[in-house]
Length: 267
Length: 285
Image 1 (cartoon, helix red, strand yellow):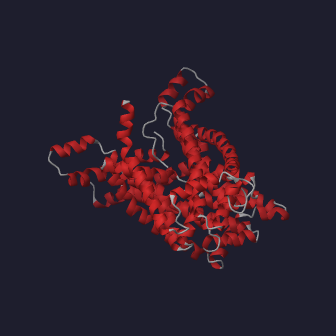
Image 2 (cartoon, rainbow over the protein chains, first blue to last red):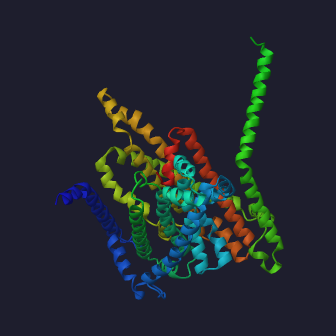
Image 3 (cartoon, rainbow over the protein chains, first blue to last red):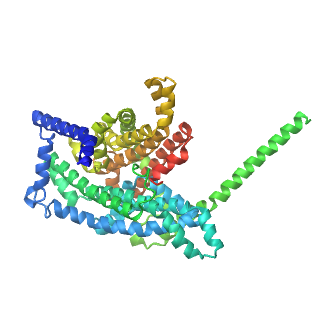
């Protein structure tokens, strides 16, 4: 009861502000009655309808549910691939100064550069299918995982490593028992930032490759001037994205509950 | 006591020494990096020149790509298209600064304000804005206004959230100390809260620059009737990977340079607290 009251006190203003905002949006869109200014009620109705094939103009093969599923399969594959390669490369670069120097010009450049610019190149090489999508999403996610893993491995306190070494621990032992455990919270942050980027990668690849799935649904809505449909798809992706980041955040709390402070707000 | 002449000489030789050590340090630090980049380019060139002619379209060599970039600037008006992307992007970015920083500070100093605004800020922060670009095309057309809006909406929440964090993290000791000496709210705000928030704001500005670039690139890709998008689709329908790759490399280099500029500005404006701020960017602690 007490927690409920605390929750209400904390969030009262948020609810009021949200309801006010949505109300203003709804009223404004009804007053303007322009087709390019759909209100929240309209967007939600469209979202519900979009899960049936007949709810989408031009009759695509899939409804929104199927399109979301088929978009998130390449994402899952790319995410797992980037975890495997990203964590191993990050550890390698964290423990060996030489390999860091050999690789970091490329990794830093691609980490900062807008990956979306490579989408046409990927389409040129791999067509419009599964491979191109996986690779685009992979490029979106892998660098943030590498960079975070490397930070974690690099900042392993040298005291621990020296202590282990003076007791005769082998290199593999030090890596598996000291470096990797120390890097885990950093890796988890990388994974969390990575899932956000993966969702962005899905959206970009789907929009640019607009021949199947979400892309064709959005372009069908565009062709019929259905802004409500475009916004509904965006809301659906946002919900899926929030669930996925929530899952990774939960996993982060389970796997690395220590050292969580101050990690909540970037990117 | 030394004569002026020897001082000059010893100064100069020490200066020479400094330069010498600096060059040496740079070399030690960067040999492997230069080697890696150099061998990547040589490897690319070798593989592409060994490619059978039928497949060479899939991997043009670096010299081909470079020549095509030069050609694109001369004949395809790539320069014009880049400027046509840059101006709306900067407009959107500066608008985002003008809105994002005050909004973040407002939220940071008033708990109630924060509660009223943060559902929107956080919601739009996680929203897949690129999915809304097709709607923005309906609202704002395909010209300057739309591109500026994309850059603005991609970048503003990064600035707001970082400013908010910086403002909120002002140590209460400082504020209480100032208050107990009778400082006014305005004074505390100007002399403590804002200076404390500056490194955070700068991190926000840097991340926001990256986001604005991403936004404008996606907008350009989706609007294939003008600007960079048009050049890319001309090249890809002519099946010229050298052109597609060249444009991509130019855009990516531009993105790296712009982000680097903001990073440099960050080091100039807020050289203190660099370590912590940099950490936050990695999102790790």
